[in-house]
Image (cartoon, rainbow, N blue to C red; front, side, top):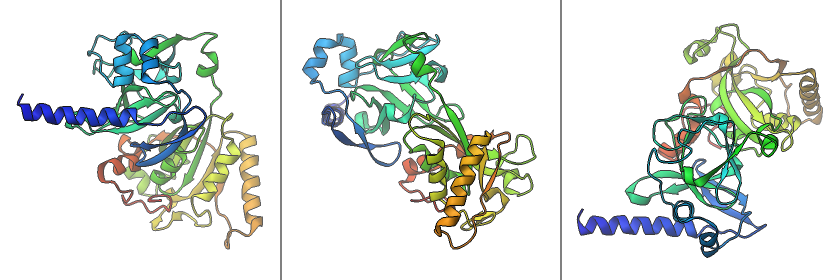
Length: 352
């Protein structure tokens, strides 16, 4: 390798290390960080405040190099690469829960691979331009330690591939110690508000939302594909199935947010997107959900906020069919590729 190339790589690595070490980390204070995944910024609580000298005393040399100096372990040599016990993977530096064992899969890369973290608040995403490459680094949200990188070549439904160093992880086997994290009560809500790209993008950012998957529901055709749904003959609505932690966000809060991000007075359309597949609907999983949704709709009608009647359907949930992979996190992918939200989505939520 030429001296010039070595200088360039050294400068790139040095700038990346400076970017890593300059992230603030004061206990109890709010820290604004660049979120490469969402194309903007988000605010998190920096829960761990230790100097690198303190980390050096706590961590074994290899883990310190990977966690604090953004190193990479050798492929296929990590202890968790072929590890598939039931339990919870946590940050090796601070113990912050990161990945459930159920999201681990064999990508063939040589490093532990996961489809999703336990929650998007568990990790931070940072643009990584080291070694003349453009990647998205994954860090522990609690202590800022380097975990690995995330790519777009993962399996459905998320399409994500979290490629993580084994040395960045500890494993807690399923049992009393991890039961609370592994068996946290999760509930679902399925909503339709026009083009599902923008709806998914908005809900995925709500604190307490664990996942948001776009798909089709409310129709009569089994296993529909996008082209069939667009024909307006299957009866399906473009919808988003949201899994959430009710201890952090309530069903009522999610439904109220749903009414705030689209026009529920438009019948079988949102903006220029016209057709039954773009209808406004709440698909309920229980009588309690139906009662709450109806009460919110009635309250909004009485509030005078809308000049026209609300036409949102409130109906029992039926089979939900996840949409094709290229629809999942569509706007997120578009932002990373072009820096823009404009992708032909007529729903008002797209592009905000």
